[in-house]
Amino acid sequence: MTRRFTGDRLVIATHNRGKLEEFAQLLAPLGVSCVSAGDLGMPEPEETEDSFLGNARIKAHAAAKASGLPALADDSGLTVDALDGAPGVYTADWATTPAGRDFVHAMEKTHAALAGFPQPWTAQFRCTLVLAWPDGHDEWVEGTAPGRLVWPRRGQDGHGYDPMFQPDGHARTFAELTAAEKNAISHRGQAVARMLAQCFT
Image 1 (cartoon, rainbow, N blue to C red):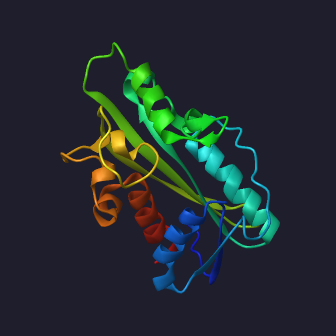
Image 2 (cartoon, rainbow, N blue to C red):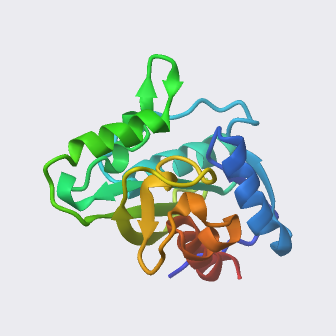
């Protein structure tokens, strides 16, 4: 039996200000106020699973247990078919450098890994959302945006791997689309719409 969210305050299990604002805007029309795990001073739990669902569950349950409030977490990344699904759950790790996260470095690393593989380089952006309650119950949904990787990278907007990801049915990369265009087809946009339908509306 699907559990509905009935409160008015939700923890977003992230230390990323942009992600908090994104979810806060989506949930504001429903009268739900959002606070981040970072704002509540919670440590970031170690993500030890090898799936997006497993890592999203770790983050959501840690935040719900620590705060006593329902918590929403997402785990997302890029899966490349020629690379057997890599970088996948290690998408952010591929961007890690001694100076911090650098997604230009990550895109160059991905392009180098694809050398010798015939095009098209099919890939998917994937997002899993988990809504967890303090009693241990959770609900989850997934969103997938299929497409292909292009090189050289194109576009100034977006973030992460957006400049080298061209979604199916479009001639532009995620980084060349407007925010509204991207959100209408993105993996996170799909997952949020499904979560809202399943648990909030």
